[in-house]
Image 1 (tube, helix red, strand yellow):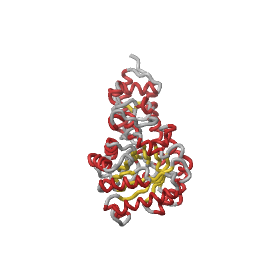
Image 2: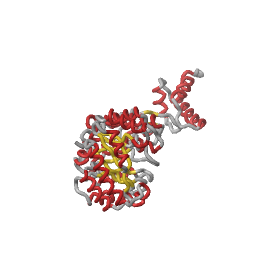
Image 3: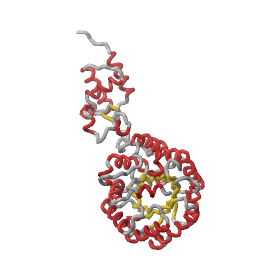
Image 4: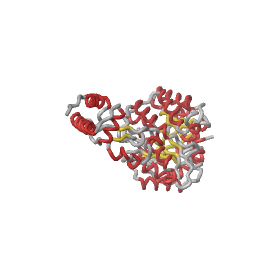
Length: 408
């Protein structure tokens, strides 16, 4: 049984996680051990329903022997946590190799990338788009003949510049031949949201209900998330993303952002009465996974990274300190398990200074608070660093609170 196809047809959202595969084109490399760990952790976001909600693209076996073995290991060790996919080009040898890398494991998949636009077909396979797409039928039959327990998916490269009716015709033919998913890719990340919506709607209009469409939308113009939400609005339920958004060039949709929005705003994006989950995602797992990926890849979590960045839950000025709920779209502690943290910066108010001092074991009077506030601001400008760390502030407070007072 193809649990991914079944989920999408039932209206459930499936995340095609690309950080181990397309993420490599962001000049990152995940070890086989880490890929296995990440696959398990991503699956745990959905508990026992991990394989029905997550396709983990483990790698591109044709890259080298080491990459083949990495994919094989993920398929063998994480197939019960997620659905594991190997990705390959539209060539018979590559398809055979990809099937071999995952065969005999649970919830195994292969995604074959074929060009859909005329320009991409000429570059990739030196054929017309029609010829390239027609040839994919033979690859589906080849893969099904090798192992019919391995689900076979097709990705239309450069779909954003391809003919919609041509894609509809071949998406239907491929599904009839046994393809599980047909994924439309904005390979260069140049599509605008209205055009993305129209593309998915047009391809859908030319196919039967048995065709399951998916997305693979790059973020070169910063529109990957907006485009993915547009596709979801047309009824698509299989969407590609990547932890921290890492992928080729400017990346893909960030998995943590997509999951967060769909978990909290499903009806706005999917329609009233939408039931996108077999098991709703555990959002408290997102920050920890993001930190794992950042540490493994060297891609930093910045203060402005949404959902999982270092700025989430931090307070440094007066009014947000008194009424934090007015300055945040959600409660980071309740939703993500991130405890609030007061940071001392040049913007610190008297309230912030008092709270930071109390945390460090000092009860300041009004004059001491004013002195400490002046010191914090002066230090920030003197060092050129906004945040004053606790150790430096603690040393200052020791001198301030233990300094002898002059008698009258």
